[in-house]
Image (cartoon, rainbow, N blue to C red; front, side, top):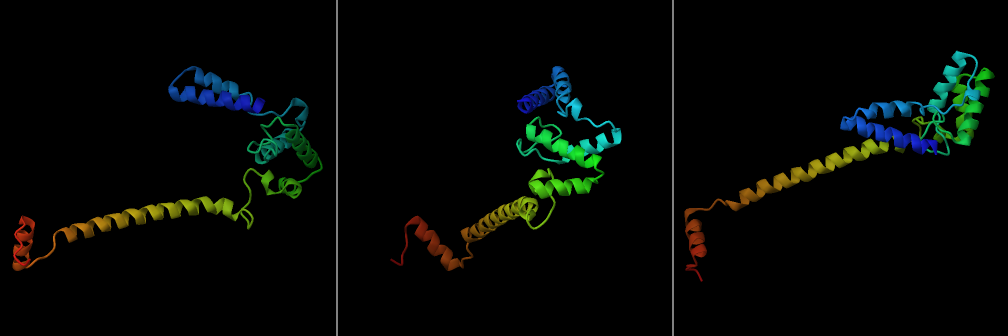
Length: 179
């Protein structure tokens, strides 16, 4: 519920800012209050550990919300994932080890920016490839169309010798003598 409310407030604020309304900045400021859903009891005592935890929260996808980080998700599963990250930080794991633990448990989908590997190759390179093929196809289409227009112009004015020109003029006037 808070996720949808936060999105609506942020969208409204963005619209008002773009429209030039002064209240848009206030609305965007209010949406900043929702930027982190981490509860006070979830905070770590050591500021350095808390900073590491917040950075990791921002990199992990909430599996319930699909496209939100666990830092801003208020789903119960996101809270559980934050607890796991805090436990792993307290145990002395590095950020890479924590990410490896979570990806082993949930797969690459848990990362908001999945790594480039054989499983995610199409995800990373498919859209740019399709875009390039589309631009190439449009270019070929217009090139052929232009080339076709040039050929049509050339075919409209055929090179005729004087006898052929007289005969063509006679045909166009309806006075063809060869019939």
